[in-house]
Length: 127
Image (cartoon, rainbow, N blue to C red):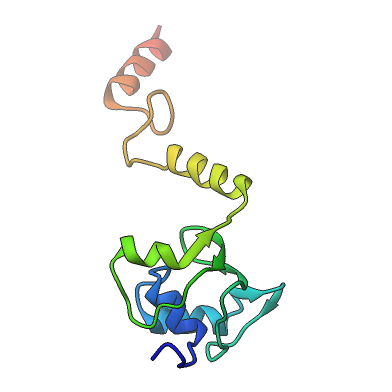
């Protein structure tokens, strides 16, 4: 089985960058998977040593293929088949975004006034 050719969409699914193989295939079709700056088709064969730019919903990955994984495996096994060489700037951007992610709570003194704020304003305007 190791001599078998491995498609890029199947590889990205197997190393757990995408939840489903069809999502990996769609990403290839939309030009979100690149080899040397050129978009690749889902049927492109993967070889050890190649570097791919992969744009997922969460982040923009830059990975180097170190092993071929033909079936989806546990995360601990999947990460052994690639090296994440994502630039430092991208990782810092993701950390910043996650730190400032909107929690759903109203930040104090920002946004619509509360009932108490309205009462205080009414009292102030009447005087």
